[in-house]
Amino acid sequence: MKTIKLNGQSRTNLGKKDTKALRKQKLVPCVLYGNKAENINFVLVEKGLKELIYTPFSYIVEITIDSKIHTCILKEIQFHAVTDKILHIDFVNVDESKPVTIDIPVKITGHSEGVKQGGKLQLLNRKIKVSALLSDLPDELPVDITNLQLGKSISVGDLSFDKLNILTPKSNIICSVKVTRAALGAAAAAEEVKK
Image 1 (cartoon, rainbow, N blue to C red):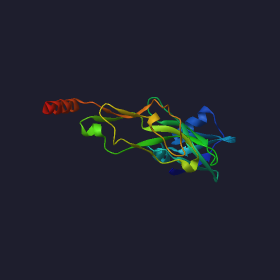
Image 2: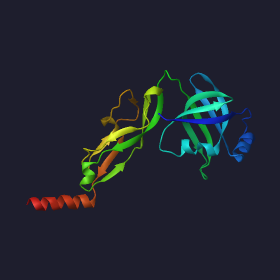
Image 3: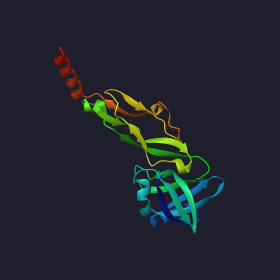
Image 4: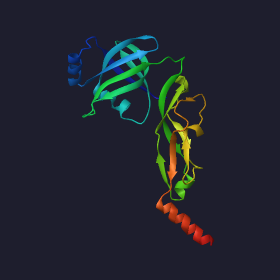
């Protein structure tokens, strides 16, 4: 899995007034916790977070705080309700010897039979939650739709990946081929030819 490196700066003043002042300086308050480590409050430069947050990909994050490198994953982001400005980010420490829980993007591969017949492909779940060791985490999860027929779907329960434990419910649908008017027209025309 891809890694992003960030430079953070620890902070000790945690009051509302101090937090507001940091945000005015285009800094984002963050916290790093988990794996029996002490919580670390720090800030990151807002501009440097675009690649991590506004992307379909998932990353392992290496944050340098006071010259110490912490390996972690993004846990939660709080956005302002009106402006969509980043208010706060939670990161969780990861241990290379223990499984990590993370959302991994789905990559559709192949050309669906149903789409070739005029159907429309719908991607309903762009990420799947998995648990695995850090070294076994892929950048994306390939889902082959070559045999996906008109009106059919692929759910999480239809998938399996080596060394990954899938945590997303099996009933969740990843993608489906919706029947369109064009597909119905093509099917009707095919029936007429047979007669």
